[in-house]
Amino acid sequence: MGERDVRHGRDRMSVTERAGQAGGCWSGALASLALVELSASGTVVAVNERYCELVGRSAGELVGRSPVEYTHPDDAVATRALIDAPRRSARGVRQLEARYVLPDRTVRWVRVSVSWCPEQQRTLGHVTDISDLVSARRRQEALVQHSADVIFVVGRDGRITDMNPAAVRLFGNAAGRPIADALREGVVAEHLAAALRALDSVESGPGVHPPVTLAVRTDAGAVVFLSAIADNQLDDPAIAGIIVNAHDVTLAVEQHAETERHQQALVAALVRTTEFRDPYTAGHQLKVADLAERIGQALGLPERTIAEVSLGASLHDIGKIATPAEILTRPGALSAPEMDIVRSHCRVGFSILEASGLPDGVTDTVLHHHERLDGSGYPDGLVGDEIGLHSRIVAVADVIEAMTSHRPYRPALGLGVAREEVLANRRRLYDPDVVDAAVTVTARPAGRRGAPARRRPAGVNSAREAAV
Ligand SMILES: [Fe+2]
Image (cartoon, rainbow, N blue to C red):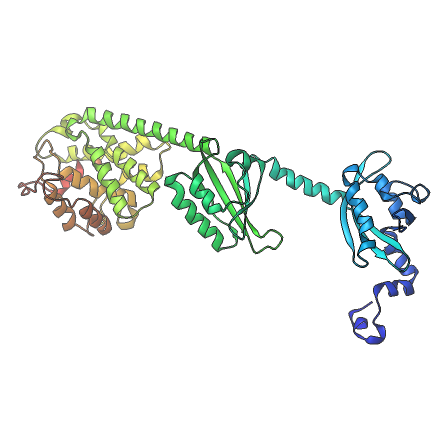
């Protein structure tokens, strides 16, 4: 029957009437439905073949019996109520999901729809096999119920609506509580701002949001690290919630922290090794690291980048381990071959660390901290942005620290002279933003940090500062 037929009054007819007229055309479709007719007292009066297949019994075995007899005991009360209900409320279809127990004791999930026919004093039932649907639903529920991940749902009102067992084990039953309150109580103080920001972000837009890692206090008082992903499905009427899935990454966080501690210990050992060879620059690398870190902070760089800059600065002169001590420590000007030997410390340092697994920013800093924007630096004569940011920061910190420290060939020049040097060569040799940041972070009230500025001694030039 086409749509047009329905619109015309002469053809307006219910599908049931159509079925009656069409006769055989509908018999195939009706045969696929499991149908049952019950008496006013709820016993089977008639069934079709499909119904018999569904309950595993013949029509002769069914007529005169109540469906409650072959319904699973746990669903018997609900089935009885369903059969009785239509008679109490004359019209309307009622539904129930229940289990039929077959003669071989297997269980089949069905959806039963019933309606009451007052004219014939009969309950008419239509039964659908939903065993596959229930199995699929059960498997999906099992995924959530047996997941080691913490899974919970936040409703439209900002309250936790559902929690899986892993979530309850960790935090106790928080269903019904506002998520913001739960975060304020559970998330450790240092991570709370990030947690509340993430919540705002998730609530503001649909879909999956980037993961956040938070330290959270459990119901038992332990602190665990969770990497949480939130999927905002508030617009989906079937879900109307934010699904949060959090994975325990405590072990990974602790292992990462331990690896970083080992790395720092190895870096410290390498720094001490350098200092044994070159006592005049004792502590130089660590002072450069301190200044470079402050410059990175003033530039607003991400924490991880600052950590790499600091690490690179701590190791930037590691290659001097191969430079003869008498060249490094001898007062007076160096010959050209001696300068070449000194300058080789960049490549030597890079070759020492190249296979260490340290981040590229760290090894590049060791290789390129003597490069200058105008291409006058070494070892590669890089120009402008060819020099990595890490190296541009350490270059400025290195020059300032070198000029404010005592060297074998001259006394300390003071912070004022050092600042003059980088400002005078701002943009030509040194990154202007880095210079500005360095000038800012080294601006201290007189007497608080560094020696007073001295007049630059004759013969001292920035090339020698930059070289050693
Ligand atoms: Fe150096």
